[in-house]
Length: 473
Image (cartoon, rainbow, N blue to C red):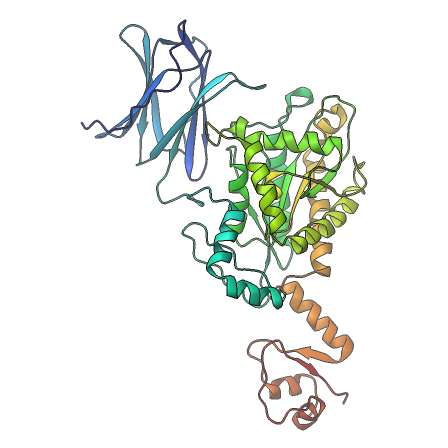
């Protein structure tokens, strides 16, 4: 048996005996999070043991509450959780592990939903979709510094700088008639339940249900593909959500929420895009502050200061060219809002702008959709209905679909269909990979010589993307 280095003292010794009131577990694809709910700030030693693999959590001067439950450890790196008493007053919790993990831990202070907590994250080496919490703006700055000349050339041509590669995934290669990729983000999750509404309805449950329905609808539409940022009851950091979208080469990011307000009266759906200068209404300010606190509730680390980070990022955002991304977001938001208006009242009749962290991807147009207010009893009831959840998902996709039919990304199926339609309407044809001049002439039932003459071609050389005039037979 080998004792590994890793014993760490957290917090201060409580004056009275602490109590472990509950243990909660959240299993994500790349890690498992174990949360210790305690009556006071913990004094803990945490270390690993080998042969067999175990993680030991010693809680000084702590007793186990009689009603403390044992979490379900299935589909996680933990086979079993055992507890015992040492020195007559200290609580030992042993996690029997079935695989190698990298552990990190931190404490969280009480908030409006929980008391004192010790959070233990067991991360699976080599399986994290995003290994480092790199800010997308910082990644873009780094890329721009490395390839400033290329960025200038692309800017003149109206193109975008290539985003930084995140994680170990193979880089996606654009190809003709590709799918438009929509990243669907279910707000909150795991340790962060989001807003809790009438009848105990939890926002994290509603948003995941709507996100899954939206993915089904997107995947069924020709030319579209959806990726879920989270597909289970676990927490994903706000910045990591945008990184995961970029890692999947997403063309668009939509975050699903169902928030609450201080009174039960507010109701209706809202759509938000990013604001560089701050929120556009008092409600928007309140909602943005509420959403941005999620990392403090869910626990990205023990010393997160979103206010300080936001000030820095606002300054950086002012120096970045985000006009195209913001315009795309606002245009799509108007389409989504129009479709939501057909199934629900609107809380605001226009797309609002606020400083939501999940919208701060500089290269991916992004929207945050507030499907309704859980704090309103009538809307809370509707938001738990599977039929209404599907209507919401259909409305969101109908708006995105309308936007992309008007503004299809290059090389997408929708762009190809638009070019084909324009070619038929104007007797023009845009050359696709694999085309030859003789095949194009045959396809349009014109002679090869007539096709050459109409386009002032001396030979048969053509290039992909070139538009040919098709002479009338």
